[in-house]
Length: 266
Image 1 (cartoon, one colour):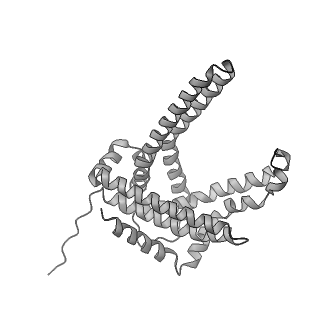
Image 2: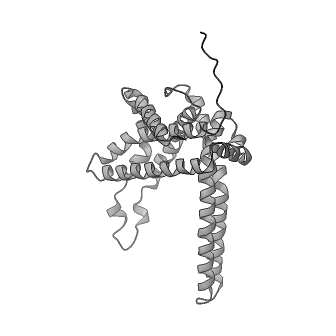
């Protein structure tokens, strides 16, 4: 697996998808806009004075409305990512909105199923910890609580590693097969990773993590620019979303048999 080739291809793909395609870029921005607007519906200084929270000052109605709208619109973005996962080249347009929405929901279900065990274990651990804290004497649960916290951290880390290792390939596999079940079929996903090589795949994930950190740093720097920082973050987000989707598409292709093209006639 040539990581440099994957990165160059992903960058060129994202560049071609957006540069000069201003309508497509604008659609991305508009679909992500509700989440970005949440920060403007309340003033943190009016809600908290540093010592206590004034919960009545929080405009819950507007926050819930923007959050709900953001979730709904995010399914269209996810559906677009599904099309990229399918190997469409060049990048597709925003067409077939119903299919986009349905594919986005299905992709969300795939990720929900992957992360569900982690959530269950975490919630169960929190519930046990709270129960122990409330039922045991004040001094007695200290050691037990500490051991429980350590155990929870270890289990959570293990589940997180599993989700990252298998869930990403599962998401692309779902896009290729159209089946939610195939997106969580562990045996097939492991076979795909084994074909490309575990070390190669882990290296690809490390490169992704480094790139994601760079994106996070860029976003953080832009976000602190007065007045326009949040707009700049909105503008660069589509590029990195497409870049990452294409990157994992290419990674997945390293683990699946490629069709043999007929030789051109002499």
